[in-house]
Length: 265
Image (cartoon, rainbow, N blue to C red; front, side, top):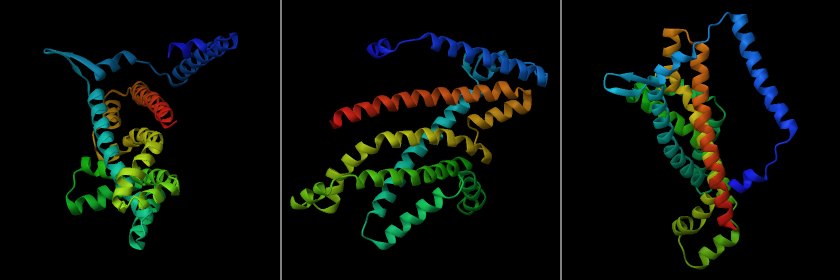
């Protein structure tokens, strides 16, 4: 890591660009404040992140909303992988009906907006089966991301050389054993980086479940804005939280991808 940083050179033009970005950001915020007559109150945001009580410090409602966002995203990520894996296996099977089910699922989900799917499941499906908004949000996100994961996994399976299949059959392995021990381990290893990137999209898409009253980060932000009118401060803070989480995950994915590539050589 140190060696890579050391290899970078900072030129005079880099200082000019950094100065230009800082000055432009300052002027933009100042003009925005003057034109709107807005009184910036970022100091009030801290009480919604960490606040002091009689029992000590505790998380504010924005951090509590962040935990709900991460919980929804984590469960949806696991389920989307399961949906995507089964859909991919259905799509490469010899069964006409399984192929048809997989194609219908993938094409229907991928070609309709996520927000419409959330509303449909919340207003139509949930009342029939008495499903809570939280579970509805998780299932909708899982099905949506699972359709994209299905295409990624299917591409990984198709990338396995035909010689691997022939070798497995020549050893007398069944179809299940061939996919379980030879095809899927290699395919999933190849598609792990794009699947991880899809996980980042899932975290961003999770903000849409606020539309069905799931109190995650975005909905808590809306509640704070309606009470305090700190519109810019709250939304800038929420955007910064999403940015920090996704930048950390992106860095982790890059490290993971390099390890996978290195181990494959």
